[in-house]
Amino acid sequence: MTADSQQGDKREWHTFEQNIPESLVSDYDKLKEGLKKYFPGGIDVTFVEASAHHAALYKVIGLRESPDRINLQKFLMEGKYILQE
Image (tube, rainbow, N blue to C red; front, side, top):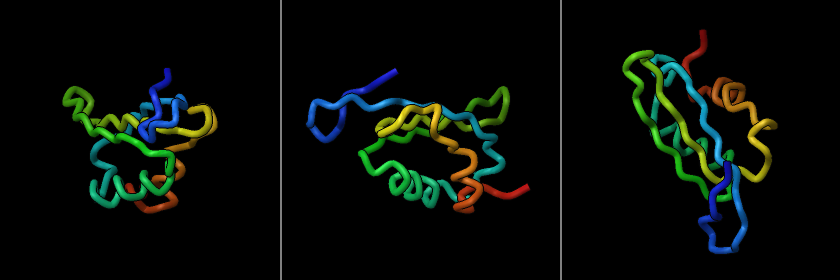
């Protein structure tokens, strides 16, 4: 899945969705800022609660690489954006 670049340069950016248990997220504001640094191509991050599984859905638009090369879980844990086990 791709999306138009938000920078007006006619580029297409990959979209990426990652489900992470909401209980692991320690600070949503810090997480959003961290994601902006991780994806400097201009992103749109939305957080949607999935009450059935108590998980938050992170939809990130603006990846410069294929989503297959992105390990968001590793980034979040290394950056201490989510709680460690």
